[in-house]
Length: 151
Image 1 (cartoon, rainbow, N blue to C red):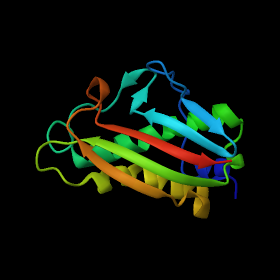
Image 2: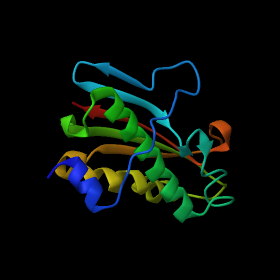
Image 3: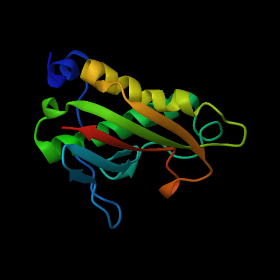
Image 4: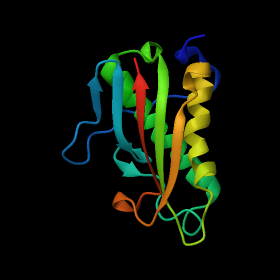
């Protein structure tokens, strides 16, 4: 089953690919690997989820923020290669979660991204991963995710 069939079955649509917010390449390809710069929970350039998980942002909303980060990532991957079915493997996901003191559920937050990748890519979607808590993220976003794909 293609990634697009799985997206349709799950009522998943990709947003417009986000623009770079500073001086960097959103996607850098070397050989068969795509390195995707950190993506935030933005829709049309506007942050959807702000503040620290465990304080201003609930666990559930932070989970949804991670999902939105990976949707932005997939929009960039599709823009770069032209077809998500060209992805051979999701290699690595690194999630940063702006966290209130005492909040230690970063893995549950980043599951929002990981589960979507497995749902859409099947066995190719399983990846290595880190989920890291941090005190601040750019523009006060709750989650930022960078990733590596094999094409």
